[in-house]
Length: 360
Image (cartoon, rainbow, N blue to C red; front, side, top):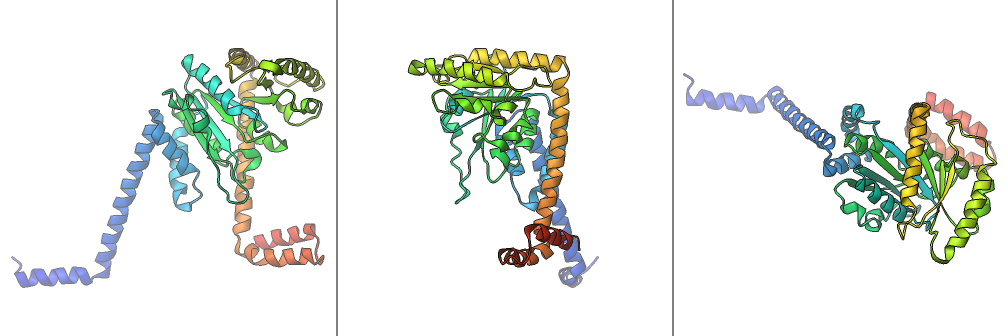
């Protein structure tokens, strides 16, 4: 049996042996990783069971740009993926002040009353100066946010295309995995870049105002051409006459465009979200669209096209990110900008030069 002196000697030897300390350190790291893995699995199970708190935490995680969260994000996405793709996705856009939040709340309340689980992904504009965002949709949709069958997630748009947050696509996936069968995706405003929301939704709804001076915009290609329906909101009170006139003008404009490949003829509807008028008719129209699209196979065809778009978009984003993080580019970029400013090099020649530098 070892003496007290031998025990003390052995203890001192253990403390002084760097190999043993390294093993202890590695063991602690392994234990920490196991605890972390359990936490992520618990979060995933919470999502799949429809826990809105866990869903919010997961969306916050996927919105993170930190590299240390990358593996956790991959685990969450890959595990939830088989449970997604089972919702109807509706994109809703319109100029500021058109009443998007009020309209979405009334539509959401109608849908939950019919037994649907509704998730609203509302993308708030970010300040180009401070990068901050108000994220006030939960305040504006005070009735819907309290409903147990509804979930509202405001997200800052940042610098992403068309006001659609960089991770909105993944947020859609997680909401579907959590059991939400109808997703309403609100965007910042209107413009050519709103193709981003069009590329991730099954139905694209454009809200317009009558008497705002933009009725003739209906004869121009762009955002209206992408719309599956136009809803003229605030059709109430003294504005009803102007709203009806605008409806006629938009109907004429829509007939100037070629027929959609899905066989659907875009509709123009009147609504007063404030008075909760016309909302039921709009949902009936959406139901008709989804029935038509699923019957003629266009629904699945469009989903396949969306997946292709987001694959190529992800590749482009990754390549762009890698390009600007390249050490050669970080060194050369300011120099090249100076040469362009001094007219010593054209932007096109500079681009080729920097691309070659990124490869070396």
